[in-house]
Image (cartoon, rainbow, N blue to C red):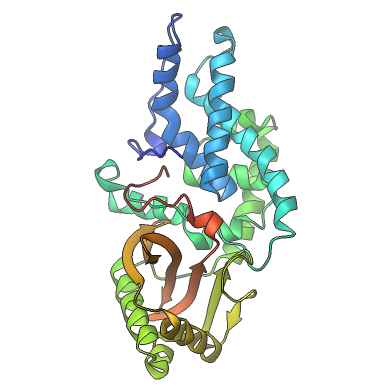
Length: 320
């Protein structure tokens, strides 16, 4: 899968004139200018990087075959095509996820906004828009609600443009946006967002788990802690969400003690936050990420589905 680092913030994509008549090369240049934006929309819609790339590839085919006279503004056209393709694919994916084995988590991506997003507040907004916690909540929305939420909240598109994108009246789009925001606010837990504290607690969690220190582990866990595992039934992990510090702590200590010397660990920024990546012989085996509230771990995500980890590239950021 080809990945592309973001080189512009979504809300600052400059208007582009229509492409010149010659050429495929000009068409490619215009499309590549917006690829990061399109991939970001598709990923937030679908929660899978592979599906997002497929949608963007289909958008390219439609862009290349489109009648140039029908395209007033390339960015708006490309966002419209990508969003509609993502809505169609999401409807199919929701049916498949009903038979998914165990809890479902989004496919993780490496994020590093770097100098392209120098503003701290803007970085926080972008990180939150791809967080595992938010993407899990977005699964509860209808495809149209999710599209409106993503386009409005993550990319700041005006309601009139969203209405045109989805071929809906603007008042209907505003209602979808209000309903989606209400669902998200009710369904998303509130966590602290200090990445330094997240990394510190992750390091202490690793030390306690690998050392078999149950008391030390329990001291890190909030009384209402949740452990959300995703293996798809394809690797060793619980097939349901674990609750209570004792159950979570004992499971993590057992996992840490089972890990032999072939395991290596790396930190990476995954979905906008620090995460611990476990590797076996250079292959990614697991991704651990904690959510923190009041200095304790309140949620721990464990991704072990090999299909979702296969395309995770630690050496470069992916489009967000």
